[in-house]
Length: 107
Image 1 (cartoon, helix red, strand yellow):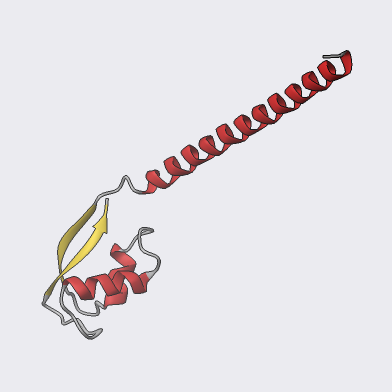
Image 2 (cartoon, rainbow, N blue to C red; image 1 turned 180 degrees about the vertical axis):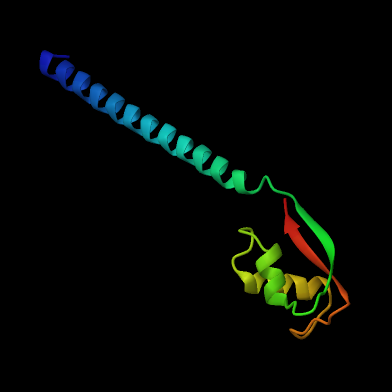
């Protein structure tokens, strides 16, 4: 093997090692980003879901209950109301004064 071939092999080896280092740095960065993102997502999932029975007072509506008991775990009040209607087997939007309904909340 002559000097030129030896120099070409060394240069090739250096390029391969540099690429390998770059791939490793990128892989570590991706893993760290995933860990940071998952810890951020888990921070919102630390709250537990509970249910409570609520006496419907005069003037109460599903919307007012959603404003009182809904939270960021729900996309919007419509999603919260949909769940309340489902767990209470309510088919319309009317709730009646003096009745009890079950409502979810997070704490």
